[in-house]
Image (cartoon, rainbow, N blue to C red):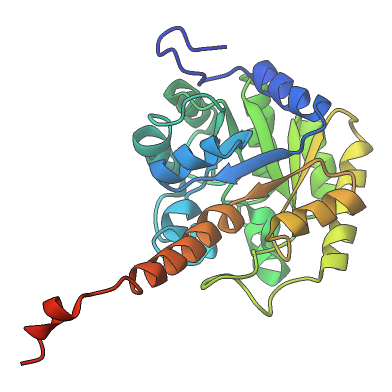
Amino acid sequence: MPNPWTGKGNPYTRKEVVERLRATLKKGQPIIAAGAGTGISAKFIEKGGADLIIIYNSGRFRMAGRGSTCGLMAYGDANAIAMEIGEHEVLPVVEEIPVICGVHATDPRRRMWHWLLQVKDMGFSGVNNFPTHTIIDGQFRQVLEETGMSVKQEFEMVAIARKMELFTVVYVATADEAKAMAQAGADAIIAHVGTTVGGSIGVRGAVCTMDDAVKRTQSIIDGAKKVRKDIIFLSHGGPIATPEDAAYINEHTDCVGFVGASSLERLAVEDSLTQLTQKFKKIPVTKQALKAFKK
């Protein structure tokens, strides 16, 4: 339903977002969510028929030609960057589909309930847990867990968002994390299987196989289903980079859709700009016009 103040769709209530997504599935269509780091990306992602737009702080680095992992590093205020992209670039141009804000839940400088009120007041229809510590492993993950930057804070953020009637679509990397997110009230869970392959700044060696992606994705789904049966499951990352890849995951798991950031926004720009520039480089120049430069 349109916003009475603007005539546009945003913002939506949690219930409205869930109903929209379920209506898409009833039509036999997949759910496609896309990251947008710029207004023009958001405008044409919506035109392409996406169901959700998600604002990640990594979108700013990605569209600046840097790797998405920059969004996990101390190169800026993740929450402020996502808010700024949403306020000034994406929310003003999106006509109808819900816009979701990436939230860095472990930010020690923010009272999370207070920040989520600001996110909701800005006109976002929901939240996503990015940057997420779920995709960090090894000794560094243990350090984060032991020093007050635990993934548990991401679960708590989702629980608060649920109380505020914000739609929640969240990343997890393991079945246990999926179970905890289901208990927190997440509406949609994204099986994150690693940084996206391909293009100029995607990973090459640091990626799992497609078979591993299938196993990890289904394990995550099974973990959440032990708690609730009403969750929407989506895939993301690693070797899942093309529509064909996402189709393969849907066909071999209980996923009903895909979340793309690099695989939609970045790879589309890389391919189209390269090809278009090459076409421009092939336009003719008359001999008469070139004559002056041959002297």
